[in-house]
Length: 140
Image (cartoon, rainbow, N blue to C red; front, side, top):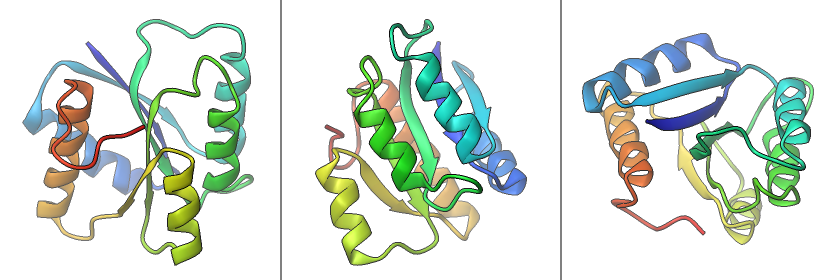
């Protein structure tokens, strides 16, 4: 079973993502963290070991309450055993410098879909990553 960690504060986005994933596969588990504080707690809890199953991907909202997505991404990349986990950063809009920084940290940036078709495409990409066959640029 694929474990997907979603760090997102918008309940509607989570519901839409869950619906889109349900149409792709039944073989997944979502772990939802609703703000930067919960995300940092998750990272700190994994400093010495990781819960099984290991997440196949972490979806990270760039704009979170308390701590922003860039801070969380840095913490993930500095924390063995999380440092190698696939991370996909989602935002309605990121600056070019943020996109470069995200890429330099080995993560993917994706614009948050605003239409249902885009959400289904995102879900398909997530499932492909979890199955080890990404449809687009491979995550580092």
